[in-house]
Each structure stands twice: as structure tokens, then as C-alpha cells.
Image 1: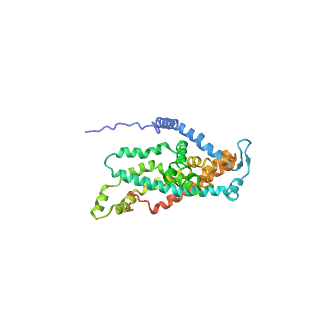
Image 2 (image 1 turned 30 degrees about the vertical axis):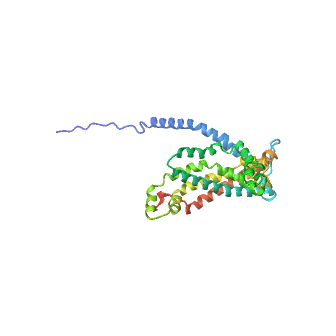
Image 3 (image 1 turned 60 degrees about the vertical axis):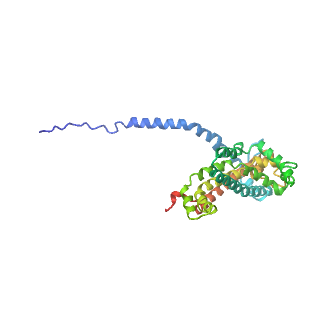
Length: 313
């Protein structure tokens, strides 16, 4: 039996490649078409204003005359010649230290309570989340001011006088407004609690662990990534709070600069005093400060945040 070799014509080098390249280019072009609205929006509404703000931070600009380059004068004045700047920094840090832990503690407590409920969970979850939907609107802040003002609800119930007119209590009134809007972190905590395996609690109950021990040894460690996420998110938002302080203090940061938050003083320098260059410098310092605080939080999280997929590594 003889075999006949069938000659095979070798394909030309590169045959079929040009259509693939053309198809790849078409797909890449389509991707850029779909991305173009986001790229255009990010460039025009974010990157360009940031670049202009960075330039203005080195100038003397009052929004009426052309910017005049002054170098680092805005920054040196901010750190060495402006005592109200440092009071705004102190008020903001005090607010962050008070409001963020209180809000997260209330959100976690409510989430734990909701998880154990058998009936009405959807209703209560929606009811507790509703204040977060309102946001930090001016109308809500004005209502809050009326509640804590002289002759308001708190004054009538406790007889303590108007909190917003007392330096020692005005900060607490603003912080309680933030705590009241705990719905968003509560929902995130509730989602994290539902991911914890029930077998862990069953084994702990068999070993005789109390509810307090189960919470400290199971719930908190397993929930630590969610706690860290909420902590970072709420801290960043707390550094940027503006509307509650503006409404409660009437835009002045009073009484005695006790609610002179950083963003409120930035607004005062930029839009009231027309020192837009100085306000731009303040904005960039705030950006760098938030970045530094966030970096420190990520750095220190390695010692207390537990990830289940890293066990045994």
C-alpha cells in the first residue's frame, strides 16, 4: 500500500493578522467611545479645577482682580500668622474624635439588635436608614438648631438652656446630628454581620461563652474589615463636614469659635473675605491631611483588622 504525500501550501506569514488587529482596534475605539463621557467629565469637572486651585494657592486672588503670584506666602501665613486657622483645626479634630466613634458605636449596636430580630426587621431597617437619605441638608440642620436653641425641645425637657449658644455644648449638638444619621454604616454593619458563620456562635455557646464573650471574641474580629471600612469612610466625611456647623452657628463658627470647623473657615476666607488664594491653600492642606490620616489608618490596620482568607498564612 502506497501513500501519497499531499503537498500543503504554507500559509503566508502574517496571513489573518491584519483582520485581528483591525478588530482589536475597533474594540479599543468602542471602549474609548463609552469611556469618553467619564474621561471628559473627570477632566473638566475634577482635574482642571484641581489644577487651577493648586495654582491659585500660590497667588493673591480676590475673584475680582487677576491673580498675583505670591509663592508660599499663603501657607506661611496660615501656619504662623493666623490663630483662627489653628482654632479651626482644633475644632475639626475634636469633632472627628467625638462624632465618628459615637456614630459607629450606635450603628453597630442597632445592627446587632436588628440581626437578632425575627419580625419587623425590614421596617426598622428602613426607618433607621431614613435619616441618612435626608443627608446633611440645610433644612435638617436648621431644624436641629431649633431643637437645641433657647426655648427649643431640649431646653424644655432638660432645662439646660440653648446648647447652640454655649461653647461647651455647641460641638456636642453638631456631633449628635452626625450620630443621628447612622443609617449608612448601620446597613454596612448589618451586611457584615450576616456573613459571619453561625457555627462559630454555636461552638462558643457549647463551650459556655457568654454573649459578651461571643461579641468580643467572634463578632468584632470577624467584623473588623467592615469596621475599618466604615471608620475610613466616616472619618473622611467628618473632616469635610460643613452644613451642620454653618446652620447651627449661623455661619460664624460660634460661640467662641467652638464650631469653627475647617471647611467653615475655608468658606469664610474664600467667599466672605474674598481671599480665594488663601482658601485654595487651605483646601490643599486639607486634602493632604486627609490623605495622611487615611494612610496612617491603613498602616495601623494591620495590627487589628482580621481577614478570614489570610488565616494560616
